[in-house]
Image 1: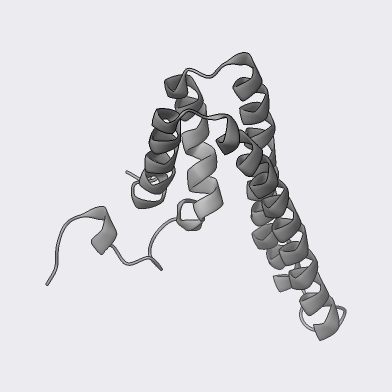
Image 2: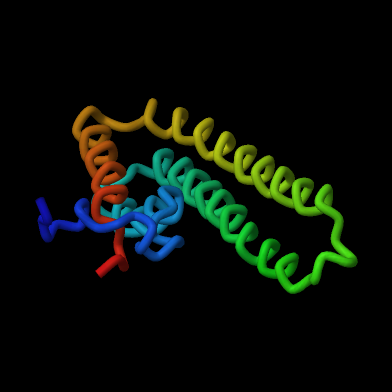
Length: 135
């Protein structure tokens, strides 16, 4: 029952930054960029995609900071609606940034060779299974 592989670890015990799939993908992109041996056109799209993934990861990193700031209140100055508005705004920013990354990803993938596409797909999945910096 108790394996020793990374996949067997308790996800709640994992570092939240590493449990975030966008952060895991963000960490994989610099080495993936090099390994894909991109053309000039592909490199420009990859750079845009990488920036948008970083934006989505940054948007995800905002929530813990915002919630930390709210937790310091004793309940007398922060209304429940403020808490929910903060969460909703953070989620909306993250969703928008992720959608932008998806749109650029679709344009990038259309320019990749079949071998580059296979490598890209494989490395993205690998980043989710074995995030860099998780050991």
